[in-house]
Image 1 (cartoon, rainbow, N blue to C red):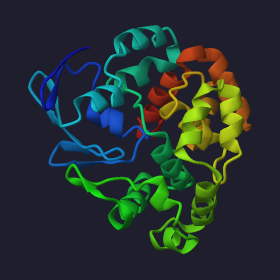
Image 2: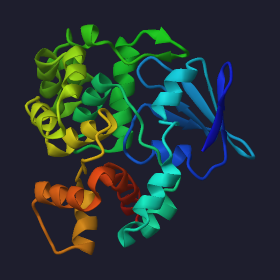
Image 3: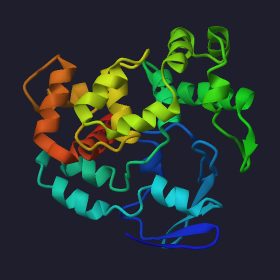
Length: 274
């Protein structure tokens, strides 16, 4: 995929390997909105608008290098899709979600967001996170930034209940006393098995949330988050299995280092109901 960096915009040529709807609505991120066919993206304290053009897309932002990395623009997704196309199960998912790219997200924001995501729907997750930003975030780059660890770690269970976190409120209050952003970054030195074990030791982090953080935060390709949609997909194509950890291990074995990419195409397609 060809793209050029300008002073306050990234110009993407073509639409085969980049589609903001596919990228932002495939379940990997919650810090975005879609207003009048313009996607607004606001991870951490950064902001960008994605505008479709005749020949591709323009990302309008003051943080050019950040979003070049965030959207993983240097990775050749055409090559990844060619390799995945050898798997028959991915034929339709690759056509349907052709513009997916796996984002490189902030680990601390990921942790908080995906604890909130447990047994939740995307609109409600976004509502809770937006309330958190409005009440505690500092205004920067046209948006209220995601609250810092220092501010969030001072909040009580009652605050998290007030913004709608429900039964997840105690998890959030406790995990903020258990881990720091620095420790999350240090864990990146670990292998995937050890890193998953550490994540599972955190309050509110189960196997699916841990694997989402491994994939979308740490960029580990050898993982395969399994939720209800993936569970349904698996039992439609493979011998019926109820153990989700075993399903994950089987799919990682099948797709190898590209398992995380395969998961996103399969999840997005399965959830579409086509």
